[in-house]
Image (cartoon, rainbow, N blue to C red):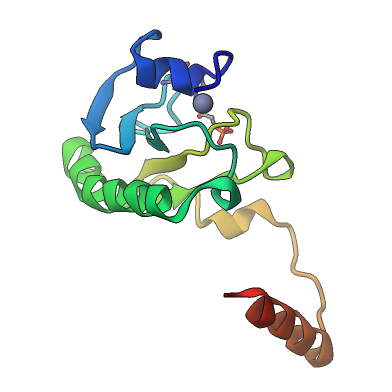
Length: 142
Ligand code: 5GP
Ligand code: ZN
């Protein structure tokens, strides 16, 4: 546990939160400043900053809880869909440095589009560079 981490304090019961689901290794609670009604965060109980820091079993626990919770959240607020996303690291806008998945209910008429809307344009990447990038990722995967 990181004493200065608000999400660790929520897990420990030292800070208030609307906890909606708990498993052995993961916890879900309502975002205090929701982007839409039902906006829920899913976190590992233990403090890890990013997905890359998360041990495999805890990653599975987080995904398992996300998987169970998404349809429940959608039903609870009568949503048409959800955006499920991690701001994974400071450069991606992560502000609370305890890894968390956002479950953001979405509605047919919300007019917001996909998360692709974060990007104004797409970079030009030629076929050779695409091949090289693919090979670097494939060779780094164990
Ligand atoms: P991030 O930008 O790090 O991906 O998102 C952090 C999220 O945590 C934000 O949506 C913010 O509203 C939420 N949040 C920050 N502090 C608290 C808190 O003390 N309690 C709860 N329930 N949510 C919080
Ligand atoms: Zn923490």
